[in-house]
Length: 400
Image (cartoon, rainbow, N blue to C red; front, side):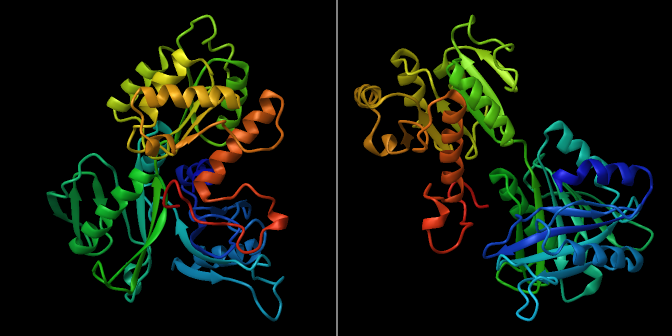
């Protein structure tokens, strides 16, 4: 939804009605991830994509139909043996797409959710996409990590007689307190890992049951990229990191080099000793399992202390360090002398990046980004033309 949110919010604020199709599950080599959305605007326009072009026409027509009927629909799209180019996915993948009608009456929470996303506040939206009782379809709860106890604070009755339960960090109801509690707990976990997913329960939220499927959009703040060392390679890495959607911080203890003018693509430039800054961010809870750390100074007085700390953090996605083979060997010896274990050293990607034959700072930044992406999604770094099997694999850094 994030990529179409501006257009959706503009129509919503104008009182218009929009058809929204969202990928809620993917199988095999599906071209778009869960959470990708397409809008059918009130002016007849199509915004966004659910499949990169394969089934957009069918989803567009379904969106128009749902706007007219008001009844949400869960549709599966896959390859058609008779005519794969008509509606199916020619790549061989399978998509589940949930199509719903959105306006201020059907989705009154949208404005607040958009404000949370804009401010970088974590928020999750859980929507019932499948249930034996059609009345449950499209019901939502909004989850915020404001509190995690699930205690009922207030109970009121609306004009239809439906119970509305407000908990710490949860608003709305998908149909019952039991179901709300189950979705609330799981949505908090998805927010912590920063990804969206379809969850399966029994019709009343039973953990081991089947019959109800709930799609959870997890809108977490952008993952962080910490770049230590204010050198020309860092400027290129910051540009690539910004392009990939990271919140990029460049940190160096030398104020003459760590300036905003040298790193315009970075979200922030910090003058501090790298290990001190990393410790302060870790102590403040701002380092998580999606954080990537790039140490580019190849100077032991900076590298060793920050790497010693980074490799001991319980949850980070990636730790890479720049340097030659000789620098790498010397760095490993210094880290061992500092007490870093072999298991901890095994987490270090050094020399940093994949073997692309890179020479320039920009090419090197691409090789670093390629290694981060490969690690995140379980890629090998080999050429696809020489690999058999699936193109898209599961995440190893997070449950994507």
